[in-house]
Length: 218
Image 1: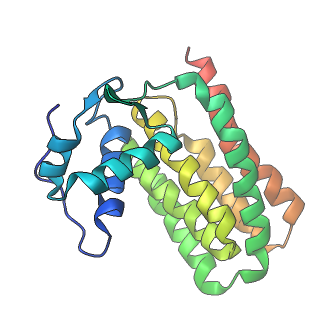
Image 2: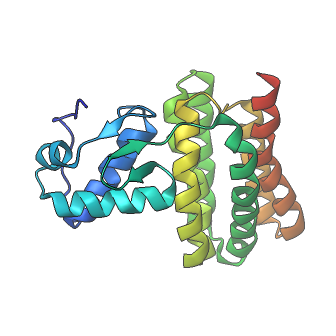
């Protein structure tokens, strides 16, 4: 199990939080391959922590569906189920749509400008076919809306779901297109106009369209 040694170490997180975040990132981007066995001693050495926070982080990752622990035997990275996109995106779409509706009363000029500028950067990345950057900027765009919704429960649930979205992206299940750019523009305008029902519909479409696009590529 080759463990990278050039990763950045956070000084603000606990050892467990740092281990969890780093392991999750390695699983998402494929550094740790589906089916790969994980050795907590090697991971602890690579991260510069004891085995306890590593084991605790692996337990959390199992709850989140990123690893499977077999007591007394091994811990393995879970396989990527590309078809899980059909189960993952509908609840995510509903939560994102609700966040947009709740964010409408919190809109101000600064937030509107941030959303517009973020979507411009998203468009540039998509048109340059820099899809990894586009994914990160897309997350920024939606996170601005989630933050404005001022609902910690929505934010927590979406954070978990978004991690699985990133993993599917790295395994070519998520496709970013010009349609997403236009839908972002619609979302901004509908929020400005205070049209909660319509922004809910567009936001859901923005997320659920990826299911049809994925299936069309199979």
